[in-house]
Image (cartoon, rainbow, N blue to C red; front, side, top):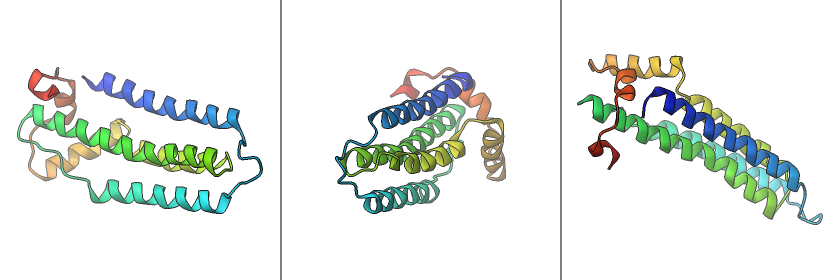
Length: 156
């Protein structure tokens, strides 16, 4: 998988967030007036903050022993950060259905959007990662590592 595939995958996750938003709006309020907005909002905010903290605390450095391991550790980190970011929106969606109100999804989506912005494979973010690698004495190019085809060993 190369950088263009990475960006396509990233955009797919962003699109998924928009589609879930459309479902949340379409469903609207299905709690029959038994809404618990304070509980839902509190759970979503706590979940969103925890997801952001875990992303920061569990930010293991990229392994620069070879281009293959560099790409593999980048992909692992990308999917972990995606899952953490997305989890807040999915929990908010479930809470919107179970406890109400439906609009609580937008709070979860905001936390997800913050996480997605931080993991986006933009030029700026890739340069930031490359700078961190260079400071650690790594001579590998992150972009070059991501552009090389994945071997069978990297796919396992």
